[in-house]
Length: 281
Length: 112
Image 1 (tube, rainbow over the protein chains, first blue to last red):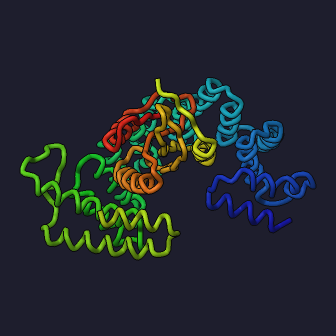
Image 2 (image 1 turned 90 degrees about the horizontal axis):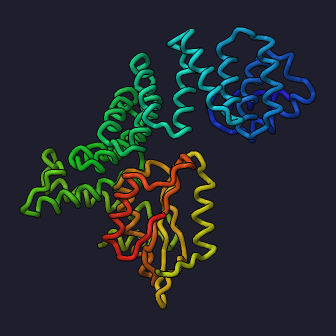
């Protein structure tokens, strides 16, 4: 029994979304009523509630919600769960009014802000979601996950310049995470800022081992810059001013190719042959 | 009007790709062959479920998929995209850009 509780606590800690596992672990506990005596009882109820609405077990969710309401009658944290269950059964307007009420009582309530933004996003009102998220980030600008979410929303509307601004904020807060540099590099490439893309791809190479996408990126950018320099006409949409010397570019492309070959030597035959053909073209 | 025939393998791969990542926008390619005025969608290559608006990996993927397709006497005949928002059925600006890039790879390309 206690091992299940430990596992549930681990899942809470890592904030993974694993509704099926949570329900599997929790069901026997709830049926034998072994949870109510523990210290984390209400944390477990909240966790199982969220997993229950994820797996469309609305009756279970309602029962847990009543338990939580009885214990914490005036809690805003419980109120947001009411909002969530409304969203789950398809009453977005009720959910929206619950969250707006919560924000009227407490404008800095993080839970309500985030749920409201998620609601708007799920309903397809991207512009409104963006507006709400920008307002949230005015107060909570150190929430890098929110910046990441905003970047995602901007990219949905193909607003790459705004998205890259958001990624820059994320990188300022999380400079050692290579994934964000990778995303930023790809954004720069898509926007035509090839010199910056190259720098960022190299940063990813520096921060991680044998990162396939980074090496592809280095090779792509190096090849493209060489090709663009060879052309006499300048393309105004592409920025290569800060790019390194041709000799350096050659060596970078060579390095990238070597590492790609090394990585692909561990892959299956079809992938390997295709990659090798691409590399030699 | 060209008749389009979709093989169960192509269809299943595309649909399963969407099913595996219901919270994300997924996209991929279809490999096709043209015979007697009909287009047969033989196979699908799922591409990604993260950052579908960004171009570098897409470029690499299309180039490598072309190499693979040629080796099987097929061509890239289609591009599929399924958005995060299930009610969204219009091709978004970024998807349209990617699809247009595919036209450069071969004619008779259809976007789904």
